[in-house]
Length: 114
Length: 116
Image 1 (tube, rainbow over the protein chains, first blue to last red):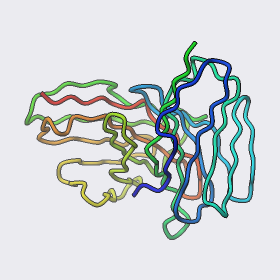
Image 2 (cartoon, helix red, strand yellow):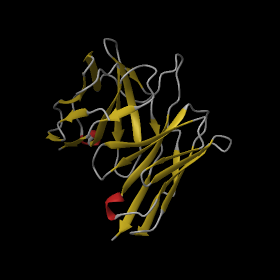
Image 3 (tube, each protein chain N blue to C red):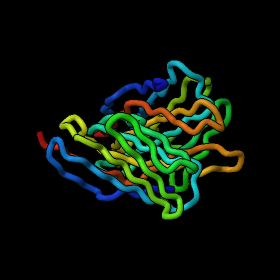
């Protein structure tokens, strides 16, 4: 079942601008992950943030997590045309025993114009 | 990160035939693999979870007799779409997780299935 929901569904910006995408989820989580998908391709894991973390950085990516609001944001700074892709957040509901099954929202389609 | 290879990347088949999609973990042992289906501009919908050596667990609404999943080894899972129908045309993606408590999954490149 889907848990994470990203917004906006579509985002169009100019190269060099920052892009911010949000993700909301419904149940408690152990961690939240962001993935990137180029058109018609598989997913690339970008970053994982654990429930006891509030912010995490990786290169031009900055992820925040607010467990009280059940939301996360992904910020891409100084965007490039190559950042054009769909971005998904995935949360992991845990079955008994702590198994992780990534479930996804609809994604945010980001277009960066050169 | 770890590498998951999915094959084929594209396949076109005739209605009524069966198609097999392979998902391999190349540099780690995947105790669990997931199969997803994605329609254009939609999210990835989990179809089933397979654990090595046991039967797959299917999500509600997914026909297990139509989408046969086999996870016979720690590095290979297969999804067979049986008696394919044009409505089965979709993008199928597999994912592999190294251990039960591991919280990172790695994804294959996906397979674009077109049934004509």
